[in-house]
Amino acid sequence: MDNLQDKELEQQQEQQQADEQQQEEKKFSQEEVDGIIKSRLEREMKKFKQELSEAEKLAKLSEEEKAKLEIEKIQKELESEKAQFQKEKLEMEATKILSKEGLPVDFAPVLLGADAEQTKANIDTFKASFQDAVQKAVDEKIKGGYTPKTGASDVPAITVEQFKTMDFEARTQLFNENPELYKKLRDKAQA
Image (cartoon, rainbow, N blue to C red; front, side, top):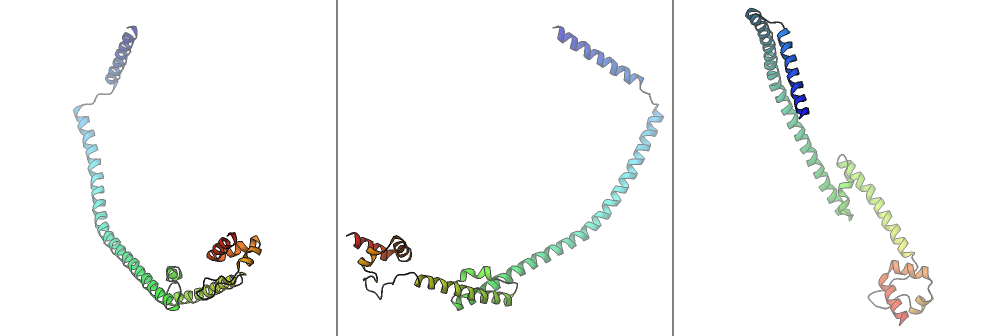
């Protein structure tokens, strides 16, 4: 209860101090108030007229700028669409060339150049590299150490006796190179 009374007393004291401060403030006559308001209004009107003038100028400039920006935007879109069309055209041409050369057409997007000449040069380089890689892979397979089946016969080129004498490394190589033959020989060797 005492806390509530103390708070009320403090609030009353604060209110009295605020009232005293207001009374101590300078009092203006009506003429002084009118003069202050008039000068303030004149300053604000002058400021408003300047801002309005600037806004009108900016509105005119912004219309011209808007038109320029719209033209630039349309030009950029046109250039982008033209570039996309050229890219698609080059990709189709690259696909045709790859197909004609017997190369995988999946590489067409990767082989695109800045123009048709560079794309053709990229394809020629790829063709040489691709054929070298294929040849190396074929050579590695041939060098593998087993003889593949001949014709359509089911007779393996490696006999069961040869399979039984193969070491682990040779069997692993056979499994990697010809899993079907490995399984047949393994099954026959276990039987």
